[in-house]
Image (cartoon, rainbow, N blue to C red):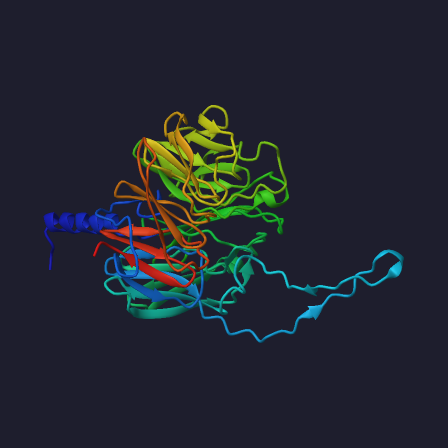
Length: 461
């Protein structure tokens, strides 16, 4: 049957509108951390504004995505209980003259804030958006490890509304239908060599025009250059791959950032940050369009980058390790380090882990200690902050939705701050106090927060 052109157009518009109202990838539909959501709650409790909660097998830094009536999360399987270990007494201290001093039981040092990475299996779990009921789960990969503040489930999934793709810290990329049918599987390490990152691979894929674009910014433990690769979303076959060289020393070659799209004169560029540089690439070929240095001005050995770039109104904002943070005009060619620098933040209020938010008018920076600041997005002029929120240490990135900023701490406390030219703390709410790294998501009139133990759906009762 031939479908009239007008209907095809309407169907296309419908697909676009569904995408815009969902949260289909890390940092949302536009990779900005901004949601097209409304009527969101500012307070909740066990008896108010929690639509549902569901226990998850283990903790993860991966952010949930929302696609139509489904929610997808990555998770390790449940960790097996550890056998009790006897305390090991330290040898007696020796005081002056060889006299024995008081001994103290030695304590095993823990990496990160949790006792283990979770189970060995790496899962993608599909839940009902309506009530959190599990619809299906698939084992994407196996071989989970603790990598300081993350495990091998950190990359977030991505969907086009028909398929869903999952990536693991081992470099396995897998495609599924929305109903859980496995379609294809690719190993980035088998194809392009070991990652060689000091703290594991954590970058999420970017979906662009049906293709997955993945940045591997690496270098500490490998001589191979970093790269950007584009995979066909339907088949997993390579569309293009380009090396991304860096002269940064040692750990400064490593980054845990995710590529973002940037619109320049009606055309899309793909921007990747890390390894002391910000680079822009042609999404059809991968060819480098421009490159800016300046992320590691002292040429330090340990300037790995965690916070991803963001973009608004033709400006790319690229964090480093607290300082500097660069605002780069994206319409350049070649080396734009000096020619296209719009402004630079050089104080210590910049972030290390949380990715900032830019809405074109305001630029919001949340640092690792729960302090938030607001700047003029075009000039970098400080408008307010840094302001204390009282939620403590933060590793997740902020969410801007319904005129409010939602900030989630590592202990699952959530500060709600009014967006705009005046700082106002609207409230602080607690969840389950578990170890929380995942960034919040929002879609429609719901907020989704993944803690170390649960996924919560918040909406007004």
